[in-house]
Length: 104
Figure 1 (spheres, rainbow, N blue to C red):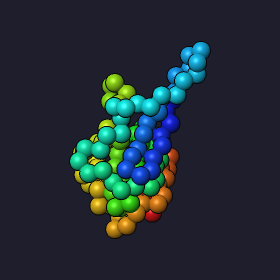
Figure 2 (tube, rainbow, N blue to C red):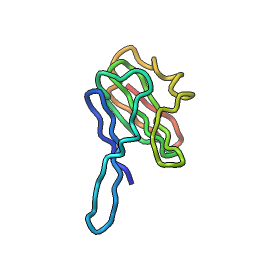
Figure 3 (tube, rainbow, N blue to C red):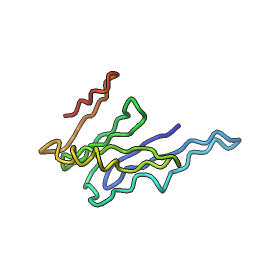
């Protein structure tokens, strides 16, 4: 299980460990922006396949895909098409069950 937090210049992925201490630890390998760090990450949702989708204050939408080591990184192939999705901040994201992404 993961928890995603976001805000000024960051998106953090947290892993929940259910050992005797019931720890929640931040995954420091995940959530690294490849080139441009947004001023604010403003919205996040989960896709039907487990990817995380984020919107930011510049209008970009990024898709974060989990690799075989459970590290979330920007899916460059998909995100290249959605970096200029909006002219202004993305305030809401919602993934429908059929895979349709709503953004605004």
